[in-house]
Image (cartoon, rainbow, N blue to C red; front, side, top):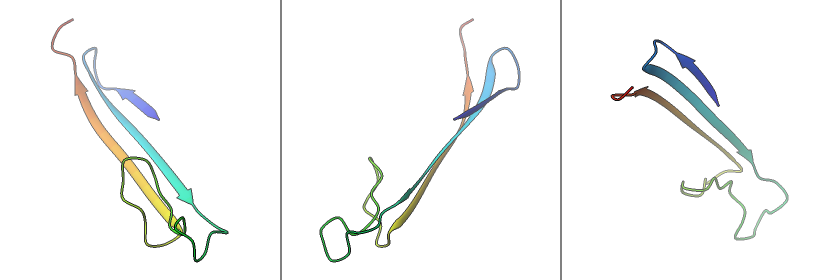
Length: 58
């Protein structure tokens, strides 16, 4: 995870994950699976989150 402050109250963050599944061809675990996302139809899956935060108090 990376975090960068624009000001005292505002920052931006980036987080990413890559999953490569192998050795499970023909089984129920054939596709890559990252928690919170649906199972990939291939052995690879990528997820990224980008957000902008602003603190309203303080």
